[in-house]
Length: 328
Image 1 (cartoon, rainbow, N blue to C red):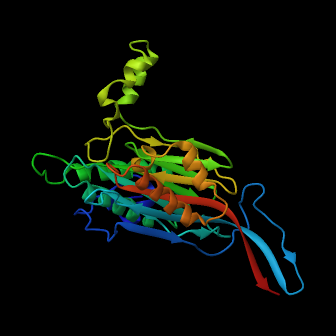
Image 2 (cartoon, rainbow, N blue to C red; image 1 turned 90 degrees about the vertical axis):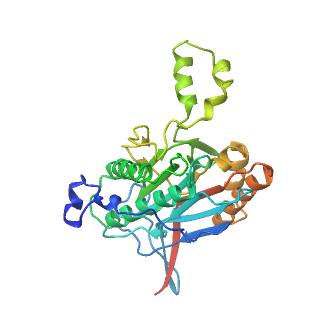
Image 3 (cartoon, helix red, strand yellow; image 1 turned 120 degrees about the vertical axis):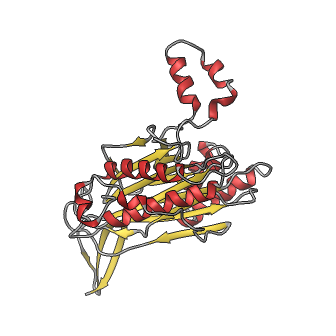
């Protein structure tokens, strides 16, 4: 899958990820946006409710098809350097004769370590190149793809030359939508949310010391109040570059999206600044485009925490129904 082309179908190699060299600057500016759309409507293999009959008007044939929309927005905040990196593959209409896949990734380079920006860009580029290898394959074990990719990226970043005795590191959250099936992966404390109507759920955990403290709370070794008072509770216990990474969130059973579902990937510049209610209010605003919602979300976080605002990034994937009209 990540190895040489003739071995890709074995799902056991990582050679692709072991290409030399950290990635050069991705060209992202302090404000950076990506979006995309694709082609071809899927006629078979959809979940219930995905087919819509054609409606014949006097001059047009109208039908609806499923579509995966992708977009992103990022801002440096008050930081001198951009250590976040974001990638979304072009959005696509579901295809009639093959599986349709899109990728979205957010990496948050760790500011207290050497060159977090280099680490985050490396994570993006390695996962992106791996995805391009499997994007059009008929059958792919996506959870295995994520696990192999995470381990390979972790080793690459861990092997960066140490600067001043410090290593490099980055968090990562990523999703692959395969038709209406959603797979995700997470290392660190960036987050993935799924929004459906007025509900919003976090599907990843924050891989920080609070996880260990919560285990102690559950076993009766300390109270929740004592755990929350610990100064080191937000210290990361898993990230790319730690070496031999083992703590990661990958869903083996895909989440089945419904029309209108929004999947949001974000760095902690958003989640440590904006409450859930405000995030939902911005995303559910019916009067602006999805791209504008992403921009509004990031800029709300930047405005709200002007003194210590981190780099702030979001990637959004939406599963929706699109109307196609053609001349008869």
